[in-house]
Length: 421
Image: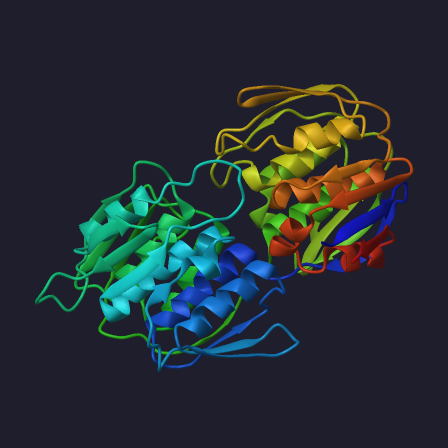
């Protein structure tokens, strides 16, 4: 099992390229199932979750051609098995995104209940309720969602869908399913993340009729068929935010090429309040920081609020910042599992339910730590970059699920970090 060995204490300088977004690439690979014509996706990140999704759709009979430049051609003309088996998706919750496209195009789907990080419950009941509103018959048996259209019906039907909670993957599933449904579908309480808008733009390029994406109310008018398209995956705002926190914590001066400042306003506002200089530049984000920054309290929220996927990384910044701070996690109930590992490095953090109170210290000291989930692993890497001495981060397969060659990019801007096989 691979590990990362980090020798801390170096400032970061230079330029780093931000990859395509994992949370856009996964639904967009599923969207390619909606058409029998080839779809070309560019800027696809090299991640374990993306590799798993490609294996999944290949297993369905889809032809996939991928090069070393981040381009993939997906041809679903001969898709023969509308099933997402547990063996292929047990490590990835995004498997549920196959449900909507398969139902829309083939009228049937068998999808394993998803896996992924152990950061809290991610119920699929919202997906089931929404698909049932569109006319699907769904049962859950032996760990699978088995869906089909009623006898005599050939297509899903448009519906008004209002979820009990804001759900990103639910919004994406309904958005894809509705493109080929009969009539109009209205999604109320829709998630507003940039990755959803990027998916909508891809679907529009395929011939879908969609309005209101990027807002809480999305309207889709179903069409008879979709065509192929060429689409560039949007830059990963969470990868960009992670690098911003790394540079702010260590000190330095870095440009994040392809980073989108307009997708990270809540995080950038907190970084500026902490004392870092952050500016949008042509095709990127520039951050300069020096000295000890000021601690910042924050509360996670759905987009455009402070992302739960950035909570752990910013907590490291608070752990070495000047003053106390309080972090409130409102999205997932188990997303403080990195706290015990940060404590091994000398951080002073107390957790009480959904609250974490941090008392900033002047320095951390290196130790062996273990990653518990994707974003926790990124926070431990940042902590290792600022800690005195050596830090060994174990179980980094979590990191590989969501970060494209993170250690290589960090070395390129001055970090002393290596992967140990």
